[in-house]
Amino acid sequence: RSQNVILMGLDSSGKSTLLARLLTGKVVTTSPTVGFNVGTLNLDKKTSLTLWDVGGQKNMRPNWRLYLDNCKALVFVVDSSDTARMAEAKKALKMVLSDKKLEGVPLMVLANKKDLPNSMKIREVSTLLDLESYKDLQWEIQACSAVEGLGLQQAFLSVHRMIKKS
Image 1: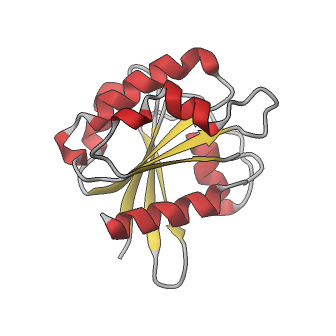
Image 2: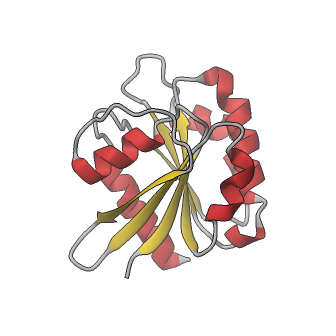
């Protein structure tokens, strides 16, 4: 049976592009997500993940908690080329992780847009998001590019592995 995985992150971090790329193998033109997009990613014959891509605009974030029921993993997507919004991303991540429904739920941070020349290394992203402070949490961070499809399959295989471990 499929496991629910929630994709969250600020608007324009690339969640919808990432979802479309995973599900269709194509790059699609996206517009800001109002509500959510959902799709099933088949990792192998027996394993599938139901991916919920939740809108990240500021006015949507208070509703994020509504999507956390039966969440088996949280995938937090950040635009690794947008240094200016990392403090905002850190705050949004902290807010969602404070929800009781996410206790014991693994976190995968995807540093998206690594195809852009000014993208930060994952160590920088990790520091700016203060990931080290989440001592009781099983978390990983990986670089990816939704546009080029780099690192996506590996990231979601890791997500599945983390779910099995949790």
